[in-house]
Length: 205
Image (tube, rainbow, N blue to C red; front, top):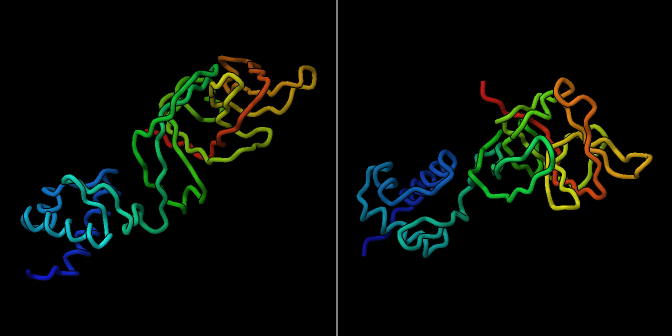
């Protein structure tokens, strides 16, 4: 049996990694064959061999795992877009990853991040509008003035400005940031879990 070419294995690895970074999904055997100008039979046989060597996981005709391939290029990180968050009264939301977005560390910094799609108009004074993508850094605490993903005692979440503790009621203050529409409006909650703080807003112009 003819031995496998290490050079072609590297080309396949690079192709699969680049394909994932661009599309956030693994390529089919056909896509690999067409992208590298090789036959589907050759692509299949190499994927089987690379699976045996632990270079990737190839099962049932699909590349399912890429343990030896960096899914984001050096200087980038992958942030999951986990759905929408209401910029208004708290609302129950279940996180579900829609896609992964590669972002440069030079612009957005380092840390563990995720993206949320803003819904509503209560944060417009902080330049967060309906439909914007908000980059959230995961952190369990916050300071007064931070824009936080707040989970209240009812298991509902919202994006608001943390306003500290109300002296009279001893409750946590969550402030709206749209004085034209919601002058002075705030929410008081008994308990608060911080799921992260907003660090950047990605807009469509």
